[in-house]
Amino acid sequence: MTTKTLETKPKRIMNQVAPTPSAENDSTDALDSTQYAIEAEKLNGWYGDFQALHEISLKIPKNQVTAFIGPSGCGKSTLLRWFNRMNDTIFSARASGDLRLGDIDLLAPSTDVVDLRRRVGIVFQKANPFPKSIFENVAFGPRLHMQLNKSELSDLVEWSLRKAAVWKEVKDRLNAPALGLSGGQQQRLCIARAIATGPEVLLMDEPCSALDPASTLAIEDLMDELRDQYTIVIVTHNMQQASRCSDKTAFFFEGRVVEFDTTETIFTKPSSQKTEDYVRGRFG
Amino acid sequence: MNRDVAESKASSTTLDARASELLSRGRKDLAITRIKEIVIYVALIACGFFSLLITVSIIGVLLTETLRFFRFDEVTLSNFLGSAEWTPLLGETKSFGIWGLISGTLLVTGIAMAFALPLGLVTAIYLSEYAPRKVRDLLKPILEVLAGIPTVVYGFFALMTITPFLQWLHGGFNVYNAMSAGLAVGILCFPTVCSLAEDALQSVPKSLRDGALGLGGTRFDATIKVILPAALSGIISAFLLAVARAIGETMIVALAAGSRPQATIDPRDEIQTMTGFMVQMAGGDVSNFGTEYFSMYAVAFTLFLITLSLTMLGNVVRRRYRETYE
Ligand SMILES: Nc1ncnc2c1ncn2[C@@H]1O[C@H](COP(=O)(O)OP(=O)(O)OP(=O)(O)O)[C@@H](O)[C@H]1O
Ligand SMILES: [Mg+2]
Image 1 (cartoon, rainbow over the protein chains, first blue to last red):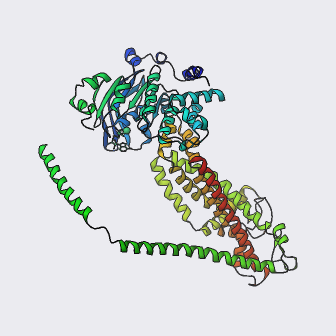
Image 2: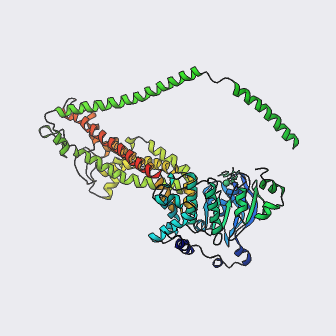
Image 3: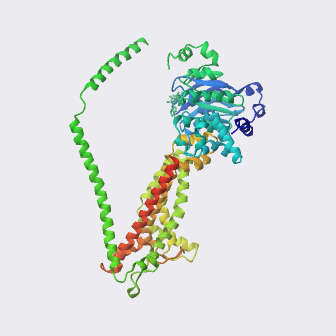
């Protein structure tokens, strides 16, 4: 199998669904909307009476990797799940404030969440492969959104699995049930499944929490490579990972953004004492 | 602030002391634990054997009485298994062709399932995946009430309401007909199918739903492509249970289907099912020692074999799906 041709081919296929950044809007604030993928302004989020997000304001830059760090329970996953409205599935979840993707109002009830989720893909904190074959898991998104013939589909599946650093382990058993994979393999399968849909924005909630160092590095390489075409948001508890592979970092604490800056600033000269304590491993 | 810390320090040291005291206290008396264990074990075995005993004795009675039936001169196995003529009460020209009753049972069951399975499944999908919480909380108890109505009520409903309605639609319907009984059995089975299928759908982890939605699937995509296949073994169980229930249903068919055994596929005709025949016999206007009386046991035994094979089929199907999905 020649890897060279595969590297380029699926990208071409995926370009059909993922429009190039410039082609998508002509809003008044041209500068902002071409620089930022997702913009939150005074976003508040609740689960029932419990307020999980307080006055979140941040702008996720396009074609960069943004890391979310912060102690457990501080609202990172919650914010991520508002970015593509996955919180719609939680009965008690509500939000107020302003959240946009380009010129789409993400909180508007009229927003087409199906299209939104195709454009803003998510890898969940817990691996959740479908009880189907490995191949069918990855082919799930493409089958929903693209018209591909058999060989195009299997090329795209192979590309995704290679990028998610799981191809070698599964190539001989693509038709075996995905639930037979190990935890770490399942997690990488879910990453492959998410990139196979060709999202513009990829949200990854602790994608490496169950991975060995080698696969972790492979996922970081993947992010590095994808950043040309996609916008990536990654939640991580691994400070080295955040500093290694993100351009910007947001530090969260108790539902608020304490500090949001370039990764270098956050890790070398943060302006808040809390941030400094956290990234130095002094609490959390 | 400082006081807070000091306070929590203090309370945690007392808690530490208490915990170490609790942990150092002797374990429960091992002998008593062991005796308890044995008593529970024996009780469980006794319960297990009791249910086994009941099952075995029922089968035993069925089997011996069935054998007695086949020992009569006028009865032959080839007639029983090879004919559709079921006329045990016809004096000289008696015939015991079980297919005359099986066909009635199959016709009623077929009609009932054609109604209850699709409707039950669609309702279950609606309740589990689409209905707002309030609607679900309202509808589920109603379904359960429906499941609790005595079947004799359904039988009267069939005879007094469904049959006249069918006759109004189409003149060809007999007063007793398979269609009316089949629909009533379908209505009876509908809540069972619906409630069990809904349980099966609900037991699919939410993370799978999220996975399908997160990839840009619609609710329909998630339901059809992920949830339904994942719940398949539970749904098949629900279907098979409904089929078994329909086959064994007695009061409705006794009241509404009639008592004329015949191999027909015309739902307008009067028929008799296996259970219907048994009710007629057990009802008692025949001699307790004639062939016709013992034929009841042969019918019961046949019914038992059919239900048993359904159960086994269910297990096979379920195991197969479990293999591919878990
Ligand atoms: N479905 C829910 N219902 C009610 N409260 C919730 C729900 N999900 C999360 N929460 C609460 O919201 C807060 C933020 O949770 P969230 O999952 O966003 O944390 P997190 O930053 O992702 O933590 P972790 O690093 O452990 O994943 C927590 O206090 C949590 O208990
Ligand atoms: Mg989280």
